[in-house]
Image (cartoon, rainbow, N blue to C red):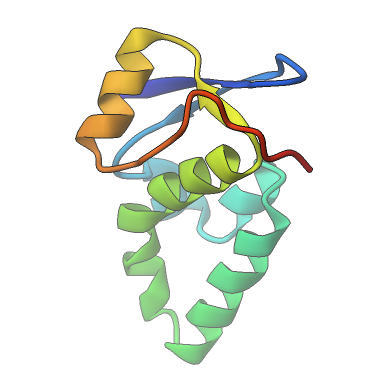
Length: 102
């Protein structure tokens, strides 16, 4: 399911998927790097090394939700009603009057 997010001050748009991350299955820890998410790039690689690669089988179930939560913390809000409802249904909480910015 596609989610549209909009930064509340700059108006920058991001489109991401909610749910299972097929790209994490095929590209592993490089997916966060492709998305500019350096923090999770290092975390996924550290977990993979610490678990002898077993972490690669867990992150596809978690990463998209973690990525969206980080975007919301950076000031992104749902760009449309469908995205808002999907995020609420997935248990991702956000504030429409978000005032955090980087």
